[in-house]
View 1 (cartoon, rainbow, N blue to C red):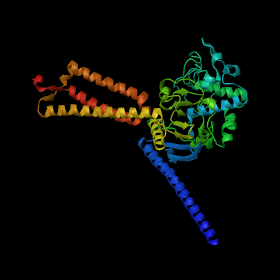
View 2 (cartoon, rainbow, N blue to C red; view 1 turned 90 degrees about the vertical axis):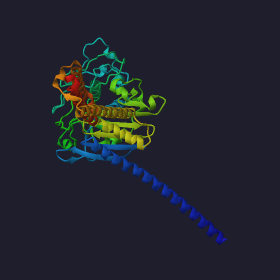
View 3 (spheres, one colour; view 1 turned 180 degrees about the horizontal axis):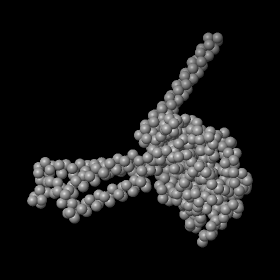
View 4 (cartoon, rainbow, N blue to C red; view 1 turned 30 degrees about the vertical axis):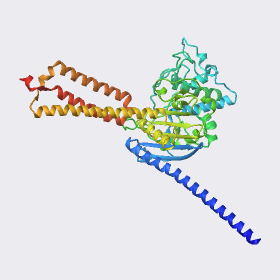
Length: 480
């Protein structure tokens, strides 16, 4: 009997040991896989920062609605040799709009306002300029989803060292276009910083507090994170210096708005806010963004943009917002149903391709749906690479033909050949193409594709020289 008991105990202990070892090995393998992902991802990011010559960047990953990893790359300030660290503050720029939307929800939850209230009924410090459109149709909801019909566009403030009264900024002073109705409220999408400045004023009017104080009490403090809108010496010492596309530093400045894009925050703390998730009502919208915004988003929600996988509304949704300033770029992108997300902040205006590459690396390594904008970016890059190859091949073929003709003495240099209408037209066309490329590059391509712009510029320059050379060559028989 004792023997049987001992045998039973022994078998039980063996089974428990085997089970424990199996679970331990599986857990260890899971950790290794998890760690390998982060090691690979970090290495990829280092290479991307170097390739695109980004001064500084910080990336945070969210998994299971929790901050799980952060990476810091490059320098917060090149001249000071100050590296990006966990304490580095970045300009969140328009990502702030998502947080402003959350702040508005706190006023809705307390019953002070509703989303469909006309904003004008709460404003005493500012009035809508006279217009043929009804400003009573400018609701809080429409301000949040950029369909209020208020002045929009991609204009930026001319920031400086002084913060001006919001009423003056809305009146069109200090660099931003005047806030006014330019279309029927609710009729169409038009991205508007001015609309979010009205929401900032709304918060101050309803709470009798400045926007920053109310934001701290209702957004930052409950989440246990830090963020700033005002810049003192301590904040300035942690703030990443912004850089233009050409690498020149942007002089230190303060923004004249807070709610539209004034938040200064670390990537980690911003990720913690993003990981908390937003009120579901903020995702409820049927406004379709247009122009550049429509390339990557299917819906302009309330302070957020929504992209549906393959553009189908029944498919999984991703929620995101970007931020672009005088010398900084950032983006967050989350899959609410999975609890997966990423936050990327940089201190360079030339970071667009870096952002798209990071999004692509993250979704690929995590087996997540690729963002449409990232896919579009890579299609454009592929197309430009093919175009560059064709330009170089064409130039080399023409050069080979010219060289062969000169060696065989079938052709010779003759400046009089420029008087030929065909050759003259060729040179004029070359000049026009280079001028158009220079203008297009300055306006669009330099910001989105700085590396490819330089390479294509060299390729087009090489082809232009070859074509001009061709125009200066004549057949020897004709010259005689």
